[in-house]
Length: 638
Image 1 (cartoon, rainbow, N blue to C red):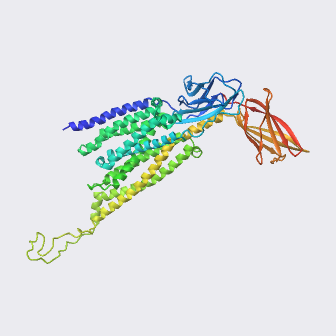
Image 2: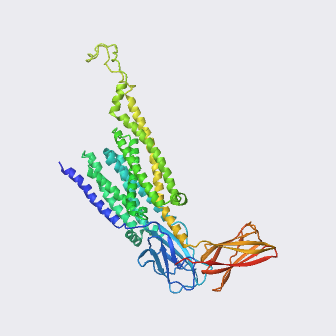
C-alpha cells in the first residue's frame, strides 16, 4: 500500500515549509551589521574641565550599538546618579548614545560609565571623567575589567559551549544515519546520542535566552527571570535567533522519529527525508551566524553563508566521529557490527567536511584578523593560533584514521578475499583416519568407511587459517577505534577553542578601535630647554615629555643631559605649569626622582591652550637655575 510512504514523506515536507519560514524570520531581521564597536568620541571629552555644567552627555561609537535603560550612567563626585532618564540615539544614528543631565550640577569631577552591546551581540564597556568648574578631590568609583568576567558572563560562556556541543552531536549523528548507515537509526546508542544532542541544544538555548538580559546589562543572576528584561531580550536580534532555534528544535523532535521508523519497517530513507535533514541543520546553523561575528563587519552577505557551512562541517565531522566511535565500541547481543562500507562512506564524508572546515576557516580568519601582525598582538589572534595548532593535530590523526579505514575496507572486499584464496597453496586430499568400531555401531554414513570417522577437510579445526582474515579485521577495527578516539578528543579541544573565539573581540575590530583612538588623541608633547650648568661654557638641556599632551590626566617625564649628550644627575628638579591668559597656576607637577630620570604620572591639566613650563634645576647644593618654555595642550573634539 502507498498510504504508509505517503504519510512518512508528508512530515518532512511540512518540516521543509517550517524551515523556510524560520530562514525568512532569521535572515529577514539580519540587515547590515558591524563588528565590535569602540568609543570614538564623547561630549564632554574625557578629562575636560568645563566652565558651565553640560546639559547632555553624548557618546559616539565606531559602529552601531544597542543599549538598555542603565547602559549610560553619569555619577557625581558623591557617586550619585545625575541622569534621571535612560539613553537615546541622537537623531536616529545607531552609533550614538545620549543622556540628559539634571538641571543643577555642583562643581567637581563626574564619572561617565557606559555598557552597550555591539551589533554582533557582545557587550563592551568603559568609563571616563569630566569636571564641572574645577576638578574635585573625590570621584565616583566604577568597576573595571572584562564585560564577560562576571558570574553571569562565565555561566553564559558555559552554556554557549554546551550549545555548540549539542549542535555537533545532533547534526553529526543525523548525518551518519542519513548518509553513511541508515540501519544505525535502529541502534540504541545512536538513538541515545541523537536525543542527548537535542536535549543539550534545547536546554542550553533556553538558558542562553534567560541569561541574555543580565549578560548584556551586567545584572545579577536572579534577574534572568525578570519578565521585563526577558521581553527586551525577545525584541533584540540575539533573542530572536534563540527563539527561532527553539522553534526548529521543536520541529526536529518530531522529525527525528522518522529515520528509525522508516528503517525499522523497511521503507528506507528517501531523498526528501535527507533534504529535510539538511535544511534543518542549515537553519540551526543560521541562528548562530545571523547573530554573532559573521553578522558584523565586512562582507556580511558572504560571511553568513560561510559561517553556516563552517558550523555544519564541524557538526558533521565531530558528531559523526563520536557516532562512529560508539558503533566501533559496540558489541550488541545481535552480533551486528558496523560494516566496513559504512566506515568507508563516513571516511569520505569526514574528508569533505574537514576540507570545508579548512576553506571556510581560512576565510573567517582573514576576515576577523585582518593582518599577520594581529595574530601575535591581539587576544583573538593568539587564540586563533591555538586553534590552528589543534586543527593540524586533528589532520594528522585523521590521516591515520583513513589508513586504518582503507585497510579494513581492503580486508572486507570480496575481490581481495578471492585473490587471497588464489594465492594459497593447494590443499592435499583429506586424509582418512581409521578408528576402532564397537559392536552394534551404526552403519557408516555415505562417504565414510567402516570403522572410520567422517571425512573432514583439513583446515576446519580450531587452528584453521581461515580465521586469519577475521583476526586481521578485528585488529584493524581496534586500530581505527584508537585513532578515532584521539581524533574525537582533539575535535573537542577545537570546539572549546572555537567557543572562546566566538566570545573574543575580532582582531580587525580591535585594530580599527586602536586606529580611531590614535587619530583622535594627539601625540606626546616634547619640549627641550637649555640651561646653564654653573660652569663656564657648560650648558646642559632638560627634556620634558607630556603624554598624551591633552586636557585631563597626563604623564610627565623629565631627563637632564650634559653638554656632550650624556645623562646628568641633579639633586633636584621641579616643574610647574601656568596659563597666563586665564590666570591658572602654577600647578606643581610634583616630579619624583626615579634614579636616572624624573617623572609624575598624575598631572591633571584642566584647560586647553598654551601653558608655560617653569623648570627649576638645582645642579649643586647651592646652585640652581630656572628656565621657561611653552607647550600647547589640546582637547579631544566632542
